[in-house]
Length: 334
Image 1: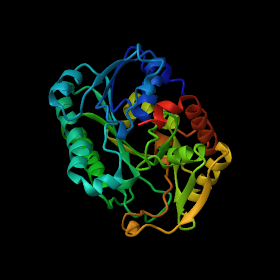
Image 2: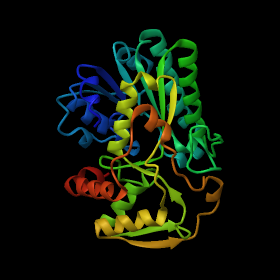
Image 3: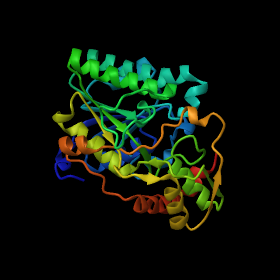
């Protein structure tokens, strides 16, 4: 962790929305170690990643509230007095957004707008961080993907993430709120849900390998992706929350390294020591939502915040595997 974070959060009040999931719980652990005053709000919906195992070891050091970002009464209670608010609350399956776009709109866009309105009214000094997505871009025209790449989302999930981002920038421009957006590539790592494959494909492949099951990849697996380890993601959020240079800014954030889908799967099989790769045809109509190759241009976040990923894909897979070897029952069981 960069040295300047050692004191940036000591005694600071931080609200983590969606804090029982992968990124939120990783931030909770990091912030607790920095002696921040952490409050976690989570709706506790396990299909989206909430898991009490994720706060093992810090449960006594944080405040946990089970509640929904869309509940105005709860949000009115929690927003005042916070120094930093990290909004990770989300409907996280882009495929589900195709079948229930109104739910996706309600959580991923309206929920964030409610947060901004309450900050404007009750806590305009707070720093507000929003987790955007690479899926805001739609089909990729040029890689690596810089912040100015056109946004033409292929599904409601990307549309609503883009709209929430625009709200963040508008509230900074018009109301002076200290908002920042980090558009995430493909995060993975310990504490992610392991019950289904609707998001978190690296973690899902690790589960299949640990269960010695087939790992299906579409076509020849040459499509490129950018996989970023959760500890590196958490560091980026911590830097953005501590830096005035991030106010009103949008950053693309990933590893910056192109990895083919097949190579990722082969790494999982090799490191875990189980599973087998099977090439299968692309699903019907899947190409309508396939973005094409994606690799992040991380030059802006590196220049502005001094952030750079530190964990290789192989090391991240190995660390994730070790975690689930120890805590398998907490993530495998319904």
